[in-house]
Image 1: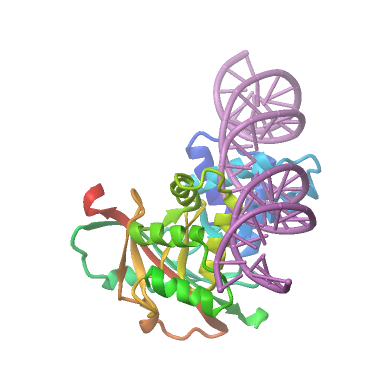
Image 2: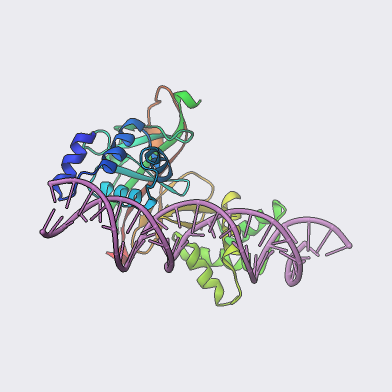
Length: 135
Length: 135
DNA sequence: CTCTTTGCAAAACATTTGCATGCCT
DNA sequence: AGGCATGCAAATGTTTTGCAAAGAG
């Protein structure tokens, strides 16, 4: 996923392209890691001093809903990144120091046996550790 | 894990047994599911009308630190349950409707290949769905 | 011009902290 | 008695909502 495709998806769903939305997406594209709301707003503030949290919250929620972003919760904070690995299902290695992520192809659900009396809807598999730079 | 063992562990670590702590643990023992702070306090309020959130927050954090409770974050809320499956490592099926959990023995990390430039410290694997009763 | 997006203010929650009092051991 | 536990009050942090004004197509 990149900014161009993301903006196209916005348009396709009847939403507008704004400079702030572009900035958010460009920033996340550079990050390659799960990024907090605070980090996003601090970055955007450089260009838009009057920027408000609400705008960021609303847009990150919208982007997530449209499948443009992936969301996780790290130490009680919501964090986001541009959906990586295209459309196909995958999981991540996540650096607990800097938040950098790396997609992995292994999905444990493939080998998961059926369980009686429980219908599986979703799952979460995340591996935490230290990336090269943070070790 | 049961209440008796939990209280023993508290004592072993220099903490005291109080009626409120016992109530919290008994309540969680009955639950067999991830339970929110709110649910705990609402239950305890029946016996202790003047009970405060702080006490619950502090104790749940303490219990988690001592390995008495397992913690997860479901829809932005911290939830707790008595550590099940004894001491050994395991994961859970979690009902997204009622929070009920069921331990599973499969751990995807067993088959996870080493990754260059990333030292693995921890992982999270949770399966979400609907339990028997909630389907 | 019309409808979406944004900012503002405020509210709604969730969680934490300092301090004095109360309760276990 | 001595030290941990609790309640109170208040602060802090996060996220949401209603509404009027500004901006995109």
